Every structure is written in C-alpha cells, then in structure tokens.
Length: 213
Image (cartoon, rainbow, N blue to C red; front, side):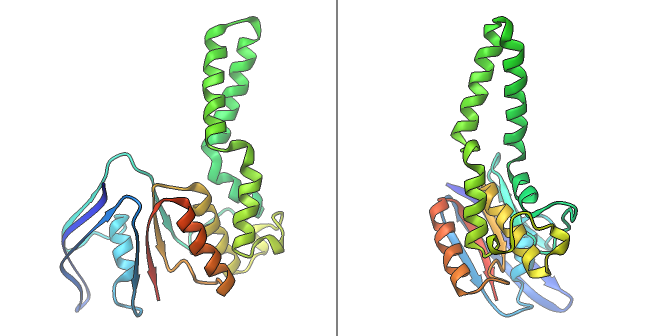
C-alpha cells in the first residue's frame, strides 16, 4: 500500500535546479535512503514531504490517517525538563488515557457498570500499547543511542548540542509513527550507535525515509 506518492516534482533553490519532473512512491514497510553531498536537495525533499517547503510544481499525496514523524535535530525543546521527562512526553496520549482510567474507576466505585466497562476498555488500550513498560523502552533507546551513560535525570539545559540532537531522535523513535522522515539521523552517533539504530529501525516494522551525507 502506498503511504506517500510524489509526482511531477520540480523545484529550484536560487539558480540551482534540484528536481525536474521527479517522482517516487513510499510503500508500507519500505526503507528508503538517499545519499548525496550537501546542497543536492536531500533535506529540501524531506521538508517538501512535511510541507515546510512548497515546491515549484508537483503533487505530494499522503495516505489519510497515518502518523508521520519528522526528525528535526535543531528543534526547540523545553530546557527545564530532564531527559527522562522529555522522553516520557513521547507517550503523552497514553498518560492522558491513564488519567481517564483512574477517573472512570472512581466513578464506577458505586457499581456503575457503564463506567467500569469503559475503564476496562481503556485499560486494555494501555496494555496493548505497552504502557506499563515505558521505563524499559526509554532505557533501551537511551542506551542504544549512548544517552544512558549521562543519566536520564540530566537536565536538557546541561546537555551539549549533540546530546540534545540524540535526545530528539530518541523521542521520535519512542513515538513509533507510521512513517519516519529522518534527515541525517546518524549525526552525532558513533559506529556502535549507528549499528544499533539500523537494527532498531528494522525491528520496528515501520516505514522510513532517510537522508545521509
């Protein structure tokens, strides 16, 4: 099944023609990588896919109702958070469901079966999405990217630029969107961390499109 289809893509940056009537299709489960020198339009292509850049011409069609994760290593993040707090925000929707479950169980204390059944339904959703293994998932990804060694309780503000970039990547991996758009994800990673990332991405069973220098 096609998740993304690009047709007739033409775009220039100044006098530099990056694409002329180009196109490609990203299918479910596919892993696509683009390698090229700086200035050849790799990052521009990803930004066109995320509608951050409007091309001169062409059609970009996403499959409806899919989740898309974009790696922006220079995104602004809340520096008052610790690394663990920031990574936990990848599961914000699940924490909201947990609150709903607790509230429903409180309402069901008087024997209200409707609230009890609804609480059980949401409880099952939490279990399906491994809510009770969040800490384990965070530690696994943090360790794989070399972040565990600096401490999960380390405040973001005390981290280097490279460490913050890895934390942003870690959060995106934990979110597990249907499609990952990764712009030079191996920046700031050593050989072992690159190998771990490749294995982890393959194990996710998700579709991803990556650019590499």
